[in-house]
Structures are given as structure tokens and as C-alpha cells.
Image (cartoon, rainbow, N blue to C red; front, side, top):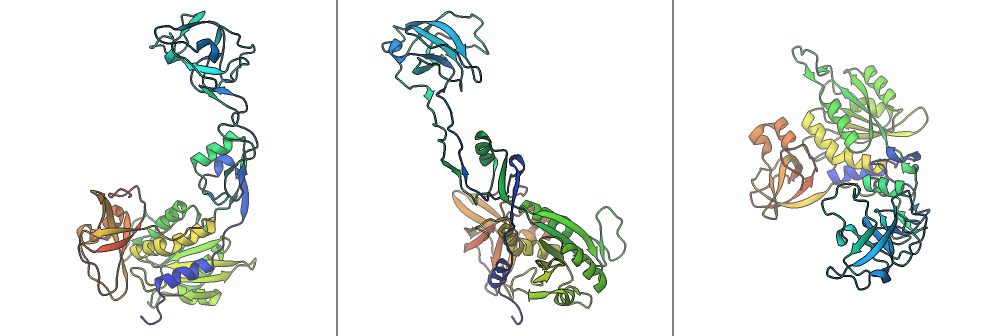
Length: 425
């Protein structure tokens, strides 16, 4: 179509013109979801001394080499050890100490036998109230059994986590275990959000004739947060050039600006005109609907820093499609994530849909049934557009003109939503 940019070209233009944020140092517990910008090496051995694996008895393997259920080895109990409170004496021939998981194995002991292989009461909960002075061992042990040696979790100097990984709970646990309190990460991008239109009213207020609720601000803000960015809502700009310019300038203090509305061909769709005056537009329409009226450009702020500006479709479904297909990849790149393309899976179409004059996105339901991915395309026909996007967990792009028939194998963009009727694949 004339003056329309192919979707793939538009996405590449965006990725070529957004930059990864700079590094910052943050407290470890605040780094969840950020991208690590340093390699993490262990500064110590873990454990730093041999420790007990199970709860049981630390002893000499030679003392129980012939032990069995029918012929147990009887040892004298000379003390106990628990995590943080090691036993201060050596284990001598014919003796044992009670030892708990994670406790340092005392000198002289070379084996730990679990309570279950001794005459320890089976239904015990907490300490043994019988205060035994001797213990019967029912199994033979070998040197090293039941003991976790020095460095068995990780050795000093080992690369524990490579930079570029997105920090999750397991990475925080691993770094905390070697004493890390703060860490170098890629800063989260701050993204200004502006909606446009004289008809917009904040949710909660009464609607007058011709007015609608501004649902896009909340949706864009939530989307930016879900992608790991920091949303900064700067309000609704009315359909006047001076108001648009003023609010965009406010937004230029952020790392990027997202607007919605005002980019179609109506008499009061002024945003593209304003963006062209303030900076440079790279594309203004794409060959993908809904949301074909979408622009992307660059504006220099007062600090001479070039700020990317995403001007999304005003209608809510078009706005969401723009977010999923264009903005998401950009935010991920800004966060420092290398793989920014959407997750695509193959699925069999349960139903069909006709093609449009351009490729067209449908919100869809992706399920795995009997080991096969199946996708229901016509959720909008069944429930209406707003109900469909609430149920959907995937997007399907209908090829222009040809569309899709039931039984076709199609590419599906998984949204990985956990708040939808259709569970994530």
C-alpha cells in the first residue's frame, strides 16, 4: 500500500534507533527483573568447611564398617553440633556426635549417618527428649558419606552468573549466598505516557455526550511495567498544537515517550504534524492492522539527547497491537535484553478468518490439546473485541487477502498472559 511501511521494516527501524540504558548499581534485593551488567564470581568456597548433609550422627566410618540391622554398632554420644554452633572436640574411636544439616563436621569424623538409620525415635518432632547417651547404628558407612566437602556448592573464583542474564529469584539467592549486597545492572528505562483527544475523560468521572474513558493510559502504563520499564504518565493532551507540544516537551525528560491517538487522517489528528515540527518521523503508517496508523520518530531534548517517540493508534485494540508488535521489543532492548523478537509457535487453526487488504492481527486463544498446539482465531466474533482481548493469550497475523482456513498451520505470537481465560503454553 502507498506510503505504508512493512511491519518488519518498521520494527527494524525502531530497534536501530533505541539504545540500551546505562549501567547502575543497586541493592541486590531491588535488582529483580533487571539485566546483570557484570560477571559474578564467587569470592569464597561454599561450604567453607565440610558440613553434614542429613540430620544424624557424625562418626568414624571404621567404627561402623560391619554394622547392620541385625548387628548394629553401639557408639557413645559425646556431644552435639548444629548450624552456627560447631562441636569443639574431636570424635574418637567408638564415639559419635549428634549433628544437624549444615553443621561443621568435627575433627576425627569422616562420615555422617542419618537418624533414620539409627535407633532414633521415628515419630520424633524436635529434640530427642530421651537424651540418649549411646546410639545403635544400623548401616555400614563409607568415608565421606553424608558429608558435603569444601566447595561442593561452588568453588572460590568460579564464574557463578554471566552478565546479560535477567535477574530472578534464583540469581538473587545465588548472589546473596556469597555475600553480595549490591550489583551492577542495566538501568530500567523511564517512559513517559501521553494520551490525546478532547473526548477523553479519566475513569471514575461522569461521561458527557461524545466522551469516552481514557483506558489507554492505564493499559500502556501496565504494559511498560510488565516489560520492565518505569511508566511516567504525563496526562491527556487536548487536540491543540500548543497543548501537544507542551506535554511532549515534558515527556522528553524521560528515556522514551509513548503517545496514543491523533495520528490518523482526521482534521484534528495533529500529532504527526507536531512531531515533524519538533523532530524527525521515521515512519507514519505500517502495513499491519489494527493500529496501522502508528508513527515513530526522534526528538532532541534540551540536553541534546535524542528521545524516541512512539505515537500509537488511538482505538484501544490498535493501541494494544502496537504495544505488542512494536513497543515491546524496543523496551526490552532498552533494558539490555538481547533477544527482543516476539515468541512465535506453530499451531493448528481451529477456525478460519478472511483476509484483509493488509496483514491483520487477531487476538486468539492458544491451547495445547493432546500434545498439539491449537489456536482459536475468532474470539472477537464470539465475545466482542474487549472481551476477546481479555480472554486471549496470543496473536495471530492473518495474511492479507488469503486469510486462514480451519486446519491451517499458522504462526502464533504467544503473549504469555497468566490473567487470561486461555492458559499460557
